[in-house]
Image (spheres, rainbow, N blue to C red):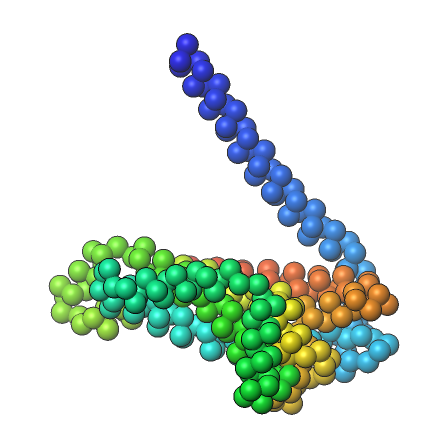
Length: 276
């Protein structure tokens, strides 16, 4: 009787899991197909003109600004996040109070709404440091926003590397620093890249923080102090005006393709590095 009852519960749980997976997959497919159907017909050549105007509402300046914003934010946050994670895992003593404070702070920062980061960036970078509404102000704000994410994912990736790897390296005469850069970090690359991919996704999809720090100027940036408009802000402005809804859907298609390309390339390089 107990055996039959257990099998009955297992059957229900297994089918609930399958149903959940099917619902999740179906929702994802529906969203992707809906965006493609709405946006692909409006991917016209004028939408990719190098200069934006009220007639073509070109997304090309926003696309290039998004790439510049992403690279600059990652260049700031990734080295700091990885270095912090290395300290927490490889150098800090276990039970260190400072480590606990850093981890709690990082988890707290991860849950703060992006608009709060935007207000901070506007007060500190735009006004106090007098960077103005610029590419630099937006990138610094986004770097702070994704720093906890990159730090925590890198930390977990480093923890997942077996201690036997480190012991074998030490046994061959390698020092601490060489072991970290030649053994530990290459083994943790897939986990680190996962954090970077999540960070890129947050940068590409961010709107609220950038409106307050980078501005909404739809022109190619002349430098890091130029006001810019990213793709997500471009899509928000077009949909908010209500005059170019179709072009907003086309912009969403381009955003979707960018995220897909980034994920594909990251997975490819992660496999190559792990194989080596």
